[in-house]
Length: 215
Image 1 (cartoon, rainbow, N blue to C red):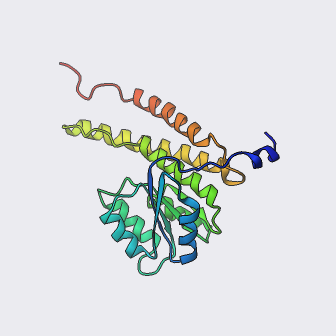
Image 2 (cartoon, rainbow, N blue to C red):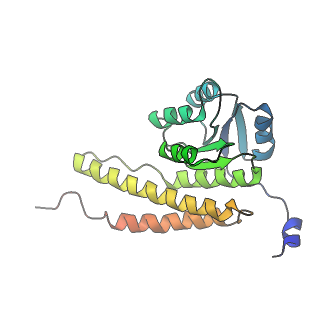
Image 3 (cartoon, rainbow, N blue to C red):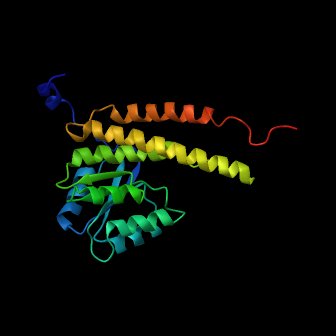
C-alpha cells in the first residue's frame, strides 16, 4: 500500500476498547489536547493539573491507564509513580511517563520505578494512542497468578511472575521501537500479544513440575 492509499484510508479510533485514561500534566493546553486527541467512543479521558490531584483521583476512582508528566508542581510524576507501585490496589495499573526531556537519567529512572512506557514532548498524539493501547493490552495479558497456600508454591509463583513480567516488558519495548521512527503499524499490538503468548507458554513449561514430589 503506497502513501496516497494510506492517506485516503478511513479514519479509525486507536483506543477501541472500554478504557479510562488519566492524564496528569500542569499544562492546561496539553490537557485539552489529550481529551480531544485520545478520546473515542470507547475511551474516556480525565485530566489532573498536578501529582496531588492525580493521586487523589487514582485512589477514589478506577482507571485502566495513567499518563504522567514528569515535571509537575506539588508532586511530580516520579512521586506519583512511586506511590502507585507501593499501593497494593494500584500497583498493577499501567503507567506511561511523559516529558520534554529525553535524557538517559529520566528514562532509566522511569523504568526503574516501574513505568511501562516513556514518551516525549511535543506529543505525537496518534503514536501516544498506540502506546496506551500496547500497555493496556499487555497489562491484561500480564494477570496476577493464583496465590498458592504453601511457601514453596509462593516462591515458585513469585519467580514465574518476575520472569513473565520481564518477557512482557521486553516484547512491549520491541513493539514501541517498531513505530518510534515512523507511523505505527496497524497490527503491531496484535503481533506483540501473540509473541507474549508464545514466550509465556515457554516459561510455563519450565514450571510444570509439581512443588511436592509424591512419596
